[in-house]
Length: 228
Image (cartoon, rainbow, N blue to C red; front, top):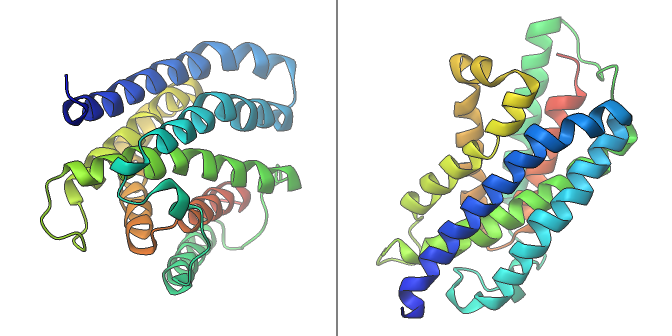
């Protein structure tokens, strides 16, 4: 099999393996740890420890190995660029959207009772781990396979497929927390899908993984740290 045919298979096999292993962690490994440690320690173990080994390291090595097939080569995607206008606009939108939503629900804006400073760093790490997988590797690798003629045209097919994979990887934790049905019936799954497309778009426009990772961190932090 030629490398041209093998590369899409590598992307698919990687995702299947990631989804399978992560589902096992969330559905069967998380519970025993959850009962033995505090929630802060649990976050550090699962979001930092497991995601370093299972998400960050494999994706980083694959990006380096197949850099020539990436839309943005590995030596470019970690640079700080000058496209901070996009970051500022999305950052402001996230902030206003979540704070106004919290105010409508509670009549005030305040930190959640379970907020801790550790969460700031945990979510920052989580944002980078998830973005290196879904934007730096999967979207970055599949964007050039979409067959688009214009390199300046956003690869919608790659972004939508990537968004569906990003959505699916949330299913195990939703099942573990007993919120799968609620998220599907309330339309919560739509926001996850749209966020993935937005993160892919910011990566495409800025050619930097840093910007979508910071936006991902800010969304998760606001969503869980503001009383709702």
